[in-house]
Image (cartoon, rainbow, N blue to C red; front, side, top):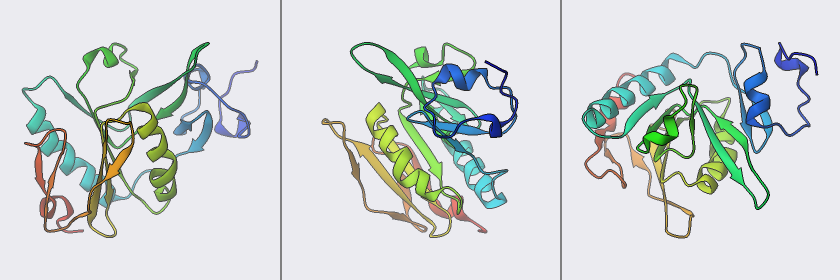
Length: 199
C-alpha cells in the first residue's frame, strides 16, 4: 500500500483503525469516530483559544498536586472498541481538554489509550453537530465519567455524567454568571464569568 501523505488520498467511505491513523504522514488534523474520518477545522478562533486556555489554567491549578493529569489539544485519545474476537481502536479523538486519573492510560508518549475521566469540548460553528451527536455517543460508550460541552455563543456549559448503567445524564445548563462545578470532582469549581470574560 502506498504511503498516505495527504488527507485527500483517504477513502472517506472506508472504516479505519488507529493503526491506519498512526501510519498517515500528512499534517492535516483528522479524527476517527467509529472508524470514519472526520476532517478537523483549521486553527480555532481566538475566542475558542481563550476559553480553552482559561479552563486549562484553572483545572491545572486544581489538579496540580493530585494524581490526575490535565491534557489539552492536540493530544490523541484512543477509545478502543471491544468485541469477543478482538479489540480494535476505531475511534481517535482530540478533545479540547481532558482529565486522566489512571496513569496507565498514558504509558505511551503518543496518546491516551482509554477513556479519560473528564472531557471538555468547546463548540465552534464548524463542529457543533459532531460534538453534540457523534462525540457524545463515543464518549458515553467508552465510559467517560463526565463530559462538558462549552457553548461560547450562548455562554453556557452543559455537563453530562455517566450513571451506573453507562448512560449520560444531562444536568441543567450552567449559565454565564454561575459557578461551574464538577460532579465527579466536587471541589473543582470554576466561575464562568472568568471563562467568558471579554467574549
